[in-house]
Length: 268
Image 1 (cartoon, one colour):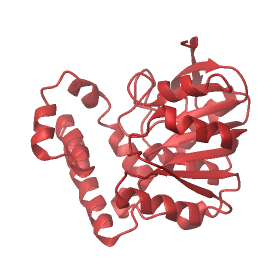
Image 2 (cartoon, helix red, strand yellow; image 1 turned 45 degrees about the horizontal axis):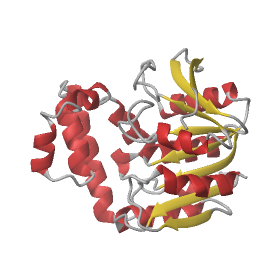
Image 3 (tube, helix red, strand yellow; image 1 turned 90 degrees about the vertical axis):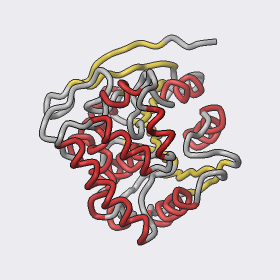
Image 4 (cartoon, helix red, strand yellow; image 1 turned 45 degrees about the vertical axis):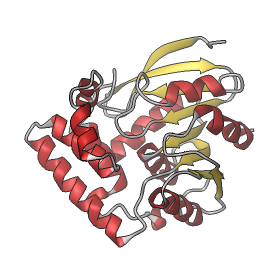
């Protein structure tokens, strides 16, 4: 049975309006998306549906995505304030579940002291290898050039190539009906690059993570490449007292029905 969803807006510290959806009942959970995703395009709605029997789940369009604003200039601190504003609207404290680059953002927010009482993150895509660090730096440079020159399609293509999509597949995607949706949020790829510190190699920010003082669960997928599983282990080692679990058979696009039971147990 589909759970009713209501919509609302939250205003962040700098005046940016953030569009939110709310579903379910119970203790508050806030979901944080990764790159290119927002409420109507990504895993958040499916995860919210899975958790709604146990929790009041808030999903929101990160700034620059969907129906949310994007006040310039961008700073990672503004996105931390955005998450804090959503949590405040949810009651002042909340469990948080975050995926991919959204996981990196949520970890920084937790270290900053935002009102997160339990944090679950899936495959924060930091770098643990010198070769991968160099790839991050090159990707950030390619991304910056494309966005500065107004080549949104090339920015999306740079991201897709970076995450491993074959060039011929990327070329085919450019004519797909979904491509304009990617281009619409292409500037936010720079936001994610900043959250990950991609321009300096995206290393696991161990000193920052040492300041996370809330119970934390770090998850990865058993079918994900080592380039994603190694950072999960490193993050779990850096966050004091963090748990680490692997979800058998899962990739970076984790299935909501597999992720949700882990979250329900951890958030109980």
